[in-house]
Image 1 (cartoon, rainbow, N blue to C red):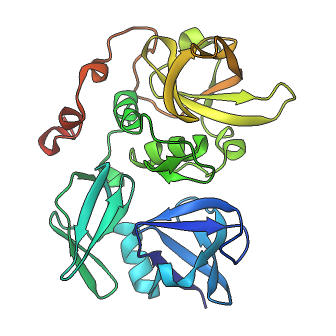
Image 2: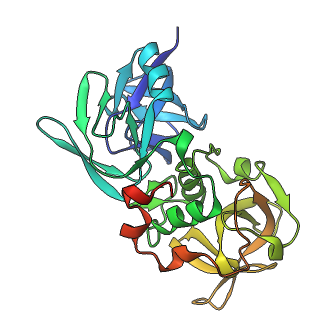
Length: 287
């Protein structure tokens, strides 16, 4: 019989092997659910419900779920849009990062197992999220200057695939965890001149290995995680880094996952001028 759990801490490292010295291959954010495959020495080998990615997590960072709770959370959950926001319990709080999941959120409270929490930040339900290039761009900009971290999935550390996955998650779109899998999604765009806002650009190392990804912005720019989350110029050669005065990534292919997006060549995207408070005003979320 399958057993399930949810992350009960802000950010839980997902490791390649069941010990704290092992490589961190990804992270779980609060409220994200998993299926437990194996138990060993206080660790749980899990597969993540959102993307099917597997790894080992400390059992103390998980809260067991019944099968019915697991199903209910999958059907009734919201996603935090706040860069960092406190989740209030009766006698403590948990700092949530953008992308954390609020199970059974009713607009004021959510619950995890037998615990109830209050949350006052902006949220979006995956089924109701705007699936547009403008929404993707607005969300991606929130991560600007987050430091690069292999396996990271939060504003305190994130990798290229994690950035793309989380931004699309907040548009209600599932993407795999790794770049090599993400490149198989969507429809190919023939030329960079035909890029739309929110398209995904993939890059190789010159030897045919695709290992980097970013999100297309207005005027053929790209937001991606390289050293930190940054914006650089994109053309048919690849990403040009003005600080290093050279191309740092070689373009391989551009893929489109959205049906509603504006051409990136036309500088008609108003999100560039919006402040974060304007971007995520709760009354304007779905306008």
